[in-house]
Image (cartoon, rainbow, N blue to C red):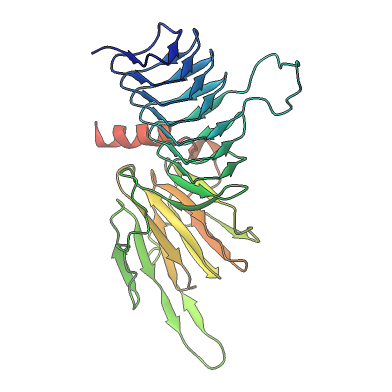
Length: 315
């Protein structure tokens, strides 16, 4: 294999991997590093302090400025715009440009704008025309200006809302889900003209001894909570008012569940990546936990979470 540079393209870098194709009117500066089997389309400009992984596609009209780090298998759509200086002034340069990371497998749609110093998480999908002002979590789908999370994708970039979601039990009981260890629980619900009542018992209905609870409320609908796993702590979530969506991820399978009734709960065991979003304006989420608060029990990096899951599987 060898590098192909179109006769109307210009590649000044010697750090370009085998199988990479650089097309007409593209310009790669000397300091740039480009991996193997990339496709750099017409009218792309790549500055010096740019690192591009393997099998990356950069469509026409994209400029990659100093400070950009792009991992393997990333797709960048036509005319996507990256920035590296929050306070640009003509002929005035910062001591160091902001570093922006686009993690492996992410896709950035046409005409999207990415503000400096952010991270686009692995396998995330940025919609066409989105203006990204905050870092995007792994697997999140974001659209709009400013960009907001509207869903999540799985490892094969299929929407988690596939229509194959686990159906919660209609009567009191427990239903296994496709996410390892995660279960949906229908609690007892008594209808009465004086007012309804729901109830659960520990550990019969909620399968662990509870040492802590917390309540999440008044969450703006565009916000996302969670985005972490626990090493040892079990959690049990009930949306006692309104509704919210819970994404549960075991490192292999990811599903989305809607909590929209005070008699429906979900159990997230340790080493489950959990996310809550799509809060209704009146949502009140009650969370029971098996451990007292311990910051060291949190796993906040998705890569670290995957490492723990692999270790637990012995792989």
